[in-house]
Amino acid sequence: MTAMTLEEIRREIDGIDSQIIGLLSKRGRFVAAAGKLKKDEQGVRDPKRVEQVIEKVRAKAEQAGFDQDIAEEVYRAIIGCFIRRELLEFSEKTGETGGRADEVVIKKPADED
Image (cartoon, rainbow, N blue to C red; front, side, top):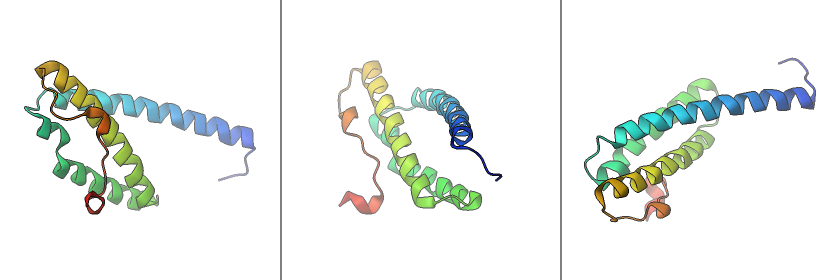
């Protein structure tokens, strides 16, 4: 990378942030579509699927030369946000109030002791 001013760096970061928001929006639309196919709250939470996604994210981070732990932390936050949204939509659709959507935290399996 050539030498850049702080202003140029910030402009680049702002552009990347715009791309990230666009991609999160697109991801959210697919999550919503998948959520409509799920039959119950467990299908929304689906811890096995969460761990599959995390494994893929870590592998992609490694290939990209990005810190795998940071990638995992970011994705656990993203997934938690989308699950909370899905749970709210699911409860509105079904009238069920089984789990509290605002209490969803996607932890590493070892953290669930």
